[in-house]
Amino acid sequence: MAPISTALTTRPESGTPYQLDSKQVSRAVTALTKHISSELQTKQSQAEKKNLLAEEGSEDEVQVSETPVWLIVSTKQHIVDDAKLKPGKIALPHALNQSPDTKICLITVAPQRAYKDLIAHPTFSAELSSKIARVIDIKKLSKKYKSYEARRQLIGEYDMFLADDRIVTMLPKTLGKAFYRGGAKRPVPVSLIGKQKFAKDENKQRIKEVGIPQEKLIGEPALVAKEISRAISSALVHLSASTTTAVKVAYASWAPEKIVQNINAVVAGLVRKFISKGWRNLRSLHIKGPDTMALPVWLAEELWVEEDQVLDQPFQPPIKDKEKRGRKRKTPEDTPKEGDELTVKRAKTDREESSKKREEPEGKSAKKSRKLKREEEEELEEKSLKKSRKSVEDGTKELEPATIEKGGKPKVDEKEPAKMSKTAEKKALMKSRKEEGKALRKVKKAELRRPSA
Image (tube, rainbow, N blue to C red; front, top):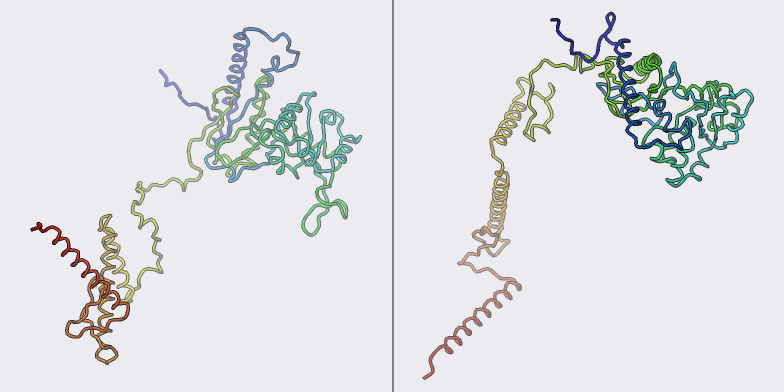
């Protein structure tokens, strides 16, 4: 019997392995769409009662058509270092938003009246202007929709939100987590200047006429309409500092051929525009539905980007010694030269000290510090004793202290009594009085203890 193949994906028969196999993609798409449709049918059959009040075209009737198909892209290295608020756009052969009843809200810079006039212009696409149900500038948006409930209501009123690319980075603070938590209705950036070419000033800022600021520039109606239609029909790529990203490419109700074409277009756009090092940085491609398992479309054979990242050297365990971690590596300039005796001696002493430190067990550092302190105290005592003897020999002092006790108290010579200061005399007098008082108290106690005659 021929061996059964256990490979998850198939490779193209000819050419480079860094490309999609059309048979593998179509096989995964047909399996996924069949599974999604069967799951929805079982859910509807298991339901106790059918919603008789549901209108035609409501959520209960169009569940299959609204079920998205996601392309899951995994890379070997991070796609970007920081999360980007502006999503990327990839043109699709089959647009995701084809419904004529789509309600769009356009967020612009102030004043909004100029953009309302732009949409109402005769050269602007009539089909597109019928979809744009509302135009609001960012100032009125921040004033009118401050509360969380108002923002939730705004999300439910419109199917899609477009925003001027000059203010799209300011919207997370204005709209909050109600818009950016799920990502389904995150505002899509649109250039309201279009691809119109403007003159530039000294600071490389576009100017249409002298005296008009950058934020008030408005493009031609026909060019702006093309930009909006391109943004509506494109797939959005939300990039973050991770190795995985998801892109909505199609809907489960579409024909498998359309889904395959959109997947090929998205993969080509990702490799060309967004993923650094292209196919070499790709690890896997999967497709999935909202509640399904991911089906593999393409898997990389190697887990590294460059061949230099694979090392043939044996494994070296990490250094546990804390002193070795903080020590810098020696450069050729730091190594002692031949004939330089001083540098050789220093290097030898450094090696000896480091070896002693390694040999010493933990807990001896405290004992060593105490020993060093005692030696320093003894040296200070010897120095002070030498000074006092020298001063007595010169005749500057009348006394010659013989030694100094370990506690630091001077020991006076018995042959020559020292001249005491006033404070010392007071202390001695107080001490003698205390001793006399103690002796008297002892005598009184002894008399009291005697038996009476």
